Length: 290
Image (cartoon, rainbow, N blue to C red; front, side):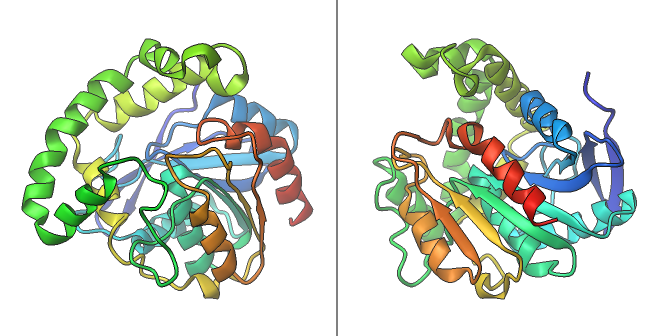
């Protein structure tokens, strides 16, 4: 059973939180697909090792109010308010996939709070020197980015039907199981439990429309608004070499920019399983830096 959501106000906006507890556990702020919902298996693993997972709906998703024009750095204000609401002064951060940049922002902009940071399969910042953002990404992605940069109005109009179709499909556990093909049901990363969780994340994330997802999409190609070199906490990066959703070159680039970073590149893993397969190691690493 999921804990009831809590709501805090940030500069007049509503932000919804999920706090998995227990209150005695060391807090870990989790940034992932965009909604507050935590994967039950991750919660069980964390609690078994004395950690307390906390997440939130990013603006415009789930129960959180939109924040048009937001950039990645703006998330630090939300995290600061959440931790103040919960009476927390020190925490670790955890980010996966599109949540990776937001976890990095938390570490960079709240250095007095964050003790360590784990990041799985993150993208880097668009336009950064030395990073070929589109190398290894699926065909057509580069064109979508060019449209966004050159004609944001057209990009927004074209985003709507794609988002509507994805929302319809991804809200079904059966769609995820079918998408995984022969791997469905073979391991925890491709289990029925995982499919039901992803369906919940997308169903709630799109419940109020696609604005929050558009804000996330836009923030991916705008300047992040913080300096990776300012991150003081130790950072551990994991990125599967078979990842085509977020090419591993992005984490290689991130590791070069972050002062205290350790990177792991498992050869046989991809975007769907790198976090699940390395969660135990990441939990142990977080505990070693408390």
